[in-house]
Length: 199
Length: 199
DNA sequence: AAAGAAATTGACTGTTTGGTCAACTTCTTT
DNA sequence: AAAGAAGTTGACCAAACAGTCAATTTCTTT
Image 1: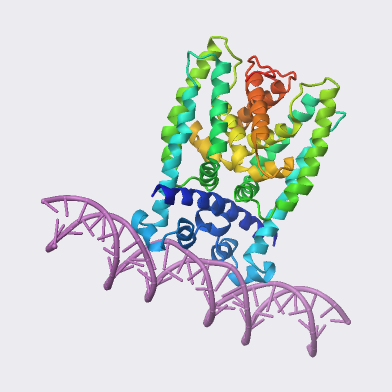
Image 2: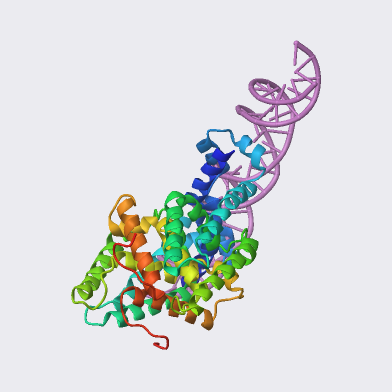
């Protein structure tokens, strides 16, 4: 069952919802097609299963943001966690991205309630830091949008990154450079201290 | 013909390649299906037509980056141009994003040659600025990845932005905040001067 | 205005698709 | 070991799909 979800996640990531056929999914999972329907009912429900599996990941990373922590440390840890997920779960990132791209018909509730609440909660933490003079007055919510964009681009648009860099796959060196660049932009952008050999 | 391409761009953006049917495309364009085939042959070729229409947009914005310009000015202009396209051509951005997401089977050449060459050329300009001590030593290529990510997120993941902000559509206020935040992150991240009421 | 080229269209076709179902096998419970 | 529940599967089906084509209309050229 978990195996089916994993195979489906990869296929939905690579071919999209409509581009994924139950027949090829079954073949990739090494099962007859009817078996997939036995477990998940419809293709739609299987897709929802994959999607739900992913949502927790998204919210969890934000735990790095807590009021007591110094902003530089919290943001560095958040970027690192996000980028780690980008690297270890690229298919999950792509499925999520495709869903957003097509208007998120299955995620309306999640985006408008769970995610929104969590972002507002963490934005309050950042405003606390700003009020205490610990960092520059930046719009916290747009800061989140941009951190998400920068970290996820290394999964979602990996082909582009690879092509421009001229490498066959993104390895340690590329992710180290990505993390360095993103952390630098965010920390210095927020008026925080940052230096080369930090991590 | 241009009308068909516009309708197709919107449909491919909203429903993806496989999710778009020639029948609904014809209906949206107010033409019989056979007419679409008369002009474009196959669905595949129509899709390529849409895609090619988009590529020029991507490369053109980078004209803002020239050696003579002060880095802060050039980067500010580049971000503004990119974000303007995000706002005026959101469907184009989404079609491009979906293509990358699914491995860019139609864009391999473009990414590895045209785009790569252009990025390398502009990265050299940025390295020139760094060598002249005009800005901090940041990896220019990853800087591009991150500027693209931040600007395009407001088109590609617009639903998410709207849901989290709790607005029905992204208007002047939201794009102004986005531009301010991105410009701040990039300029200060590059060790350049930036202040509130700049633009 | 004649003739040919270009464009338009409804009807049709072969294939692919998600989903069903009844027959069958394996596992669990007592 | 009997009986019933849970899981497995090949064969099948109706709907949706991209693409074709011959018949017709409209535009261009002379």
